Length: 137
Image (cartoon, rainbow, N blue to C red):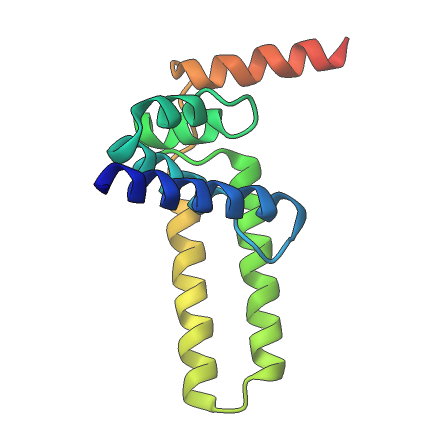
């Protein structure tokens, strides 16, 4: 029963991550990281499948191995956080709430920016480089 709960939650998290690919307001990576963690508790095979998925695997492996965030993901995250701050600035009427939310999002952006980039020795990085070379041809 416990495994079924973890697998179900992992599947829901994975589905939300996939939806995040198409909806700019939904995050993808955090749901995928949650899906891998949940799946590893209930179905190591499902977790392994997510880790080796061509689209979602490289950033997840990079995070698990090095706590590193790829540059394109950092840029997108900071842009989306900045857009959220602007929306909050114009829509939230309570000043204390507005300031608290904006400061929290700014702190999150600073934390994301300070995470390292994947190292050159990381096998995940090699996969990205091979893929980009083959895409250029």
